[in-house]
View 1: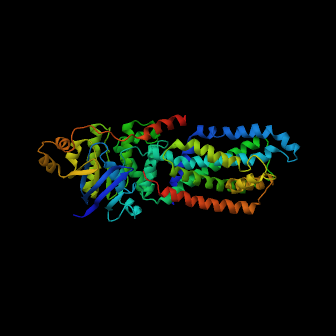
View 2: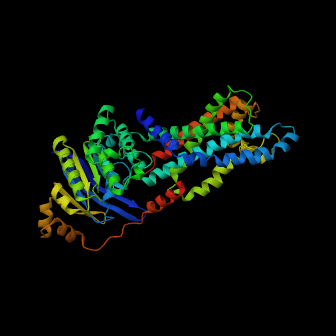
View 3: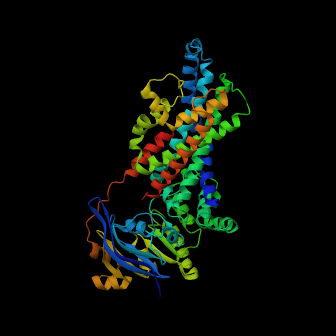
Length: 248
Length: 264
C-alpha cells in the first residue's frame, strides 16, 4: 500500500511543480469554450436546445480529462527513456502494483485538471442545475480519468518511443473526443455515427456528466455508470497485462 | 561456500544479433566478482537478465535460489542495483529520490531517514538534498545513484560501471564503502567497470566477456599468468584484442534532447 502511495505521490508532485504544463493544457479547452461555446450559441438556441455553452461545458471538461489522462499514462515512455522506470521495475514491488500506483496518480492529476476546467467554464457562464451534483460529477470524472490513463499505459507499453505520438493523437485521441457527443447532441444522428458514438466509452462519461450537471441525458445515469465502470476494469486489466510485458 | 548466482548456457538474441552467447558462470556467496569486457560485449545485457529486467532467449539463471523468469518478485527482494545509465527522477529532489527508493525496498521509515542522511553526507550531497536532480552535474547524479543503491541492505549488489565519470577521490571513497559492506554485512558484490585497476584491487574473481562469450575467468593473478602479462590491463588487452568497439546506437540520447525541447 505504502509503495502504491509513494508512486501516486510522485505523479502528484510532478504535476503540481510543472506550472507550465498546467497552464499550457488549459489553452485548448479555453479555445473550444470560447470559439465554439460563444460562436455556436445563437444557432443552438434558435434550434430550441438552450444554451450551447451549458451543453458544451461537460464535453470540454471531459476533453481536458482524456487528454491529460492518456498522456499521463503515456509518461511510461518518458520514464523508460529517462531510466526511472528501471528503478521501479527492479524493485521488490509487483508490476501490477506499479501500474496501479502510476494509474491512480495519472487519474488524480487528470481529475484535478478537469476540476480546474469546470471552474473556468463557470467563469464563462456555465451554470449547473445543482451545485451538490458537482460532487458525484467529480466521481464520474475520476472514473473517466482512470479509464483513459489505463489506455495510455497500454499504448505506452506497446510503443518504443514517442515516434508514434502524432499517430495516437490523430487516429485515437481526437476521434475519441470528436465522436463522443462532447460537442453535439446524440439525438438525430446518422446511423453510422450512432454506432461509432455508442462504442466509444467517452460518450457514456460525457452523458453521465451532462445528466448530473445540466440534467440532459441520452443513455441514463445507470447505464452510463455500468458501462464506464466495466470498461475501466477491462482497461485496467489490459493495461497491467501489457505493462507486465515491458522489458528494458 | 554457497553459490548465490548460477548461470548456465545463458543466451540473449535481439533480432539477429546475439548479445549474450551461451554464457555460464557462478558467483559464490560473499564474493566480490568483476565482470569485465569492452563496450557492447554483453555485460549490461547479462546484468539485466540477472535482475529480471530482460527475459533470456535460452539458458538458466538462479539468483539467491530463485529463477528470475518464473519468480521475479523473489529475486527482486534479494538484490540492489546501481545502473549504468541514469535512473533518477530528475523532476524530484535528491531526498525524494532516496525516499521513493526506501519505500519501494521496504526500508523502515526511521532507518530510511537516518540512512539517507548518512549516505547523502557520504557522497557529499547532504547540502543539496532539497535541490532538484535536474540541476545536478553528471558526477553529482552519479553519486546520488550510488547513495540510493546502497540505501537498503540486499544480499547481492549489482554495480554496473558505478564509478564512471567520477574523480579518483570519490572512486576510492565508494569502493572502500563497498568493501566494508562486503566484509561486515557479507553482501555479494557483482560489478562491471572499465577501470582495470579497480577490478584488480577489489575483485576476488574476474570474468572477461567479449562478443557475448566469456573468454576467461579467474583471479587477477590467474588471468595475468594465463596471458603472460604483468598487469590486468595488459591481460585484458591480450584477451580481447585492441580494436575499438562500436556500441549500438542509443536512441535514448536523441529522445532526451527532444524531451527537453518539449518541456520548455
